[in-house]
Image 1 (spheres, helix red, strand yellow):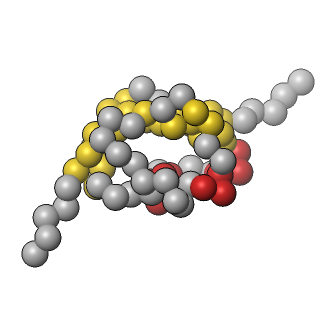
Image 2 (image 1 turned 45 degrees about the horizontal axis):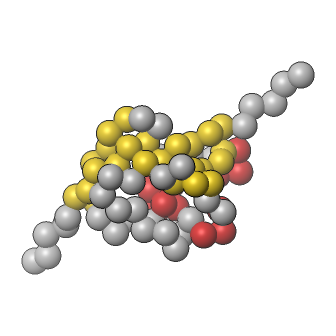
Length: 72
């Protein structure tokens, strides 16, 4: 039986321990993040949402999620 490796990431400044080999998209879905209303930054780079499923999270990655808020 294969043991699942865990990695540490930071999401909006908070430490999180997740399974290795998660894509950003899979992780955001587990958090129930509404992708249409946010911008995603990985290690200080804005990520194209069409690539979220292709990018695997690695140990010590830093994710920032910025929510869009309307107003006037």
